[in-house]
Amino acid sequence: MRVWITGAGGQLGHDLLRVLGPKHECAPFTRRELDISDPDDIRKAAAIRKPDVIVNAAAYTKVDQAEQEPTEAYRINALGASHLAMAAEEWGTKLVHVSTDYVFDGLKGIPYTERDRTCPMNVYGKSKLAGEQLVQTICSRHFIVRTSWLYGKHGNNFVTKVLAMAGSGKELAVVNDQFGSPTYTYDLAECIGRMLGTDRYGLYHVANRGFCSRWAWARAILELAGKAEVPVRPVSSDSFILPAARPAYSALGDLALRRNGFPQMRDWKSGLEHFLRNDWLTEGERR
Ligand SMILES: NC(=O)c1ccc[n+]([C@@H]2O[C@H](COP(=O)([O-])OP(=O)(O)OC[C@H]3O[C@@H](n4cnc5c(N)ncnc54)[C@H](OP(=O)(O)O)[C@@H]3O)[C@@H](O)[C@H]2O)c1
Image (cartoon, rainbow, N blue to C red; front, side):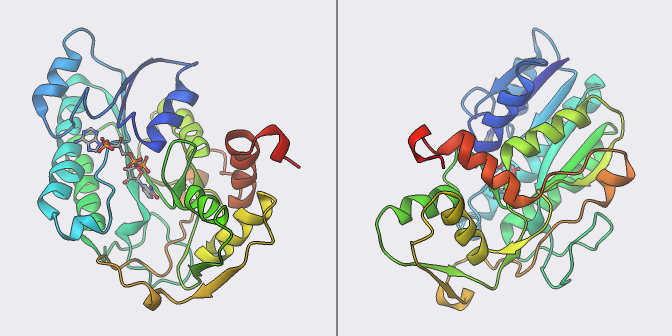
């Protein structure tokens, strides 16, 4: 199949190309090559040959900055998604649109399923929810894939930050009152690869299984990277005043994956271990 990957310069975009590249005829577009908020860019890209599938990994992802520039967040996360949805609907193309756990307010206390009521707490989450709703309304062949706490080789993410800070030799302070499902972009890309060959359209939660606090995640990163001696102090979210509120608990349950016969994702610690061994640590650092 001919597969477009938008947001190919991002951390998920890189792993989508790594996973889908050997199996499909992929056209990866960075923001410079295809700005999803510009319908002309989308038309130009399709002038030669239209895709069978579009995987939209492009997004405005600066959660705190979005509070200051909501117009930009909505322009990309909502309008950009709607432009892709309109093109996909016109061409009879499938659209895999990636969304977020931040569509929830974090008050549920047990993993969120696809049936739970959304209630985003910040501009980023609201703009992503608007994108989901536009995709659902406009495009009949859609997969909406909500994911959470992403990390991968090509990103500035929590895992890479913890490892960088560990190198400084100082004690780390990490919040222990935010819970979620850390998800390896490679695993997410593999799941998307399984979906796009089917017509089992709809809304899916796709995250590595299980959940933990950010503090427990940091501890696991250090232990698996052979740096267990680095001290990590658990602190409350109140210690960091950030512009955007975050859900305290946004673990995702995989009801739709199971109901639709897709394999479950591996658990978050196995995904993390795989990432560190294969994508991060040098041969000498691997135990
Ligand atoms: N990161 C997380 O923890 C997390 C959690 C849950 C859900 N998600 C969702 O997962 C998806 C992938 O996230 P990610 O972590 O891979 O994000 P990322 O690394 O920030 O990548 C997003 C990419 O989209 C590009 N982009 C921004 N505006 C664009 C536009 N108008 N047109 C085309 N490309 C544009 C960015 O380019 P520039 O860098 O040049 O702006 C960047 O390369 C997003 O939908 C995000 O909302 C992420």
